[in-house]
Amino acid sequence: MFQTEQLRAFLLEYLKTTVNQRHQTLQYSHCLSGVEHIAKQRCPEHFQHAIGFRDEDGARLKHVIWDLILERVLVPSTDHPRSMNDGWPFLSITDHGKKVIAEQKPVPYDPNGYLTRLQQSTGGLHGTVEAYLAEALTTFRTGNTLASAVMLGAASEMVFTELCAAIAVGLYDPNERSQFEKKTGQRKNMVERVKAVSDWL
Image 1 (cartoon, one colour):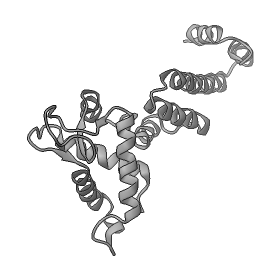
Image 2 (cartoon, rainbow, N blue to C red):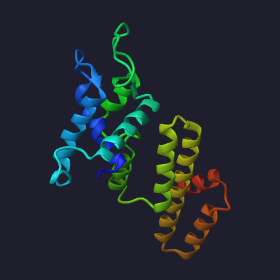
Image 3 (spheres, rainbow, N blue to C red):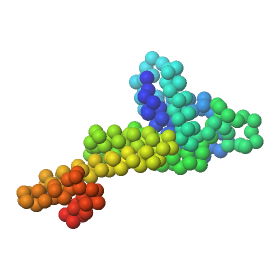
Image 4 (cartoon, one colour):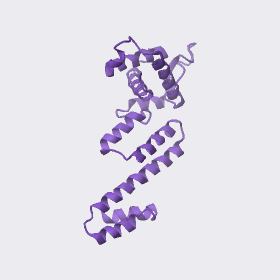
């Protein structure tokens, strides 16, 4: 059984191959077979006793597609305004979706890939920071950008607090360390704390 976020990553990868195929009408069945093909390449162990996806994986993929529709990456229609083949199971990629799919690095619409890349590039995130970022990604994908910004702010403050603690540990002079900790303690407002770190630099 595949996880929802795995299927989401595979689907975005498949959609990237379809962007320039203007004469081909995209349908749910194409997405299903395309994602199956990628899944077989990435996770062959899941297909040892099956030719294709299990029913629950196919249903989960359908949910992922509808998530991308709600996130304005896909619309349930063709690219041809005069076509009679409109609505489900026909699909087309929006202009916004094309920008999302064109990204080379994982994007917020692939939250697992995005968080994994952050973990790798930073050497590891604090569990609380990761939880805030995961929530920020979820709210961003549902169009709640203000709530997403609040979560990003909380994650940033947590990272900054860790930075202050790491700097303090590296100060060998007890008096200097004590003064720095007073200036960057959580009782101080963020402007004062940032200024203290800037002055230290």
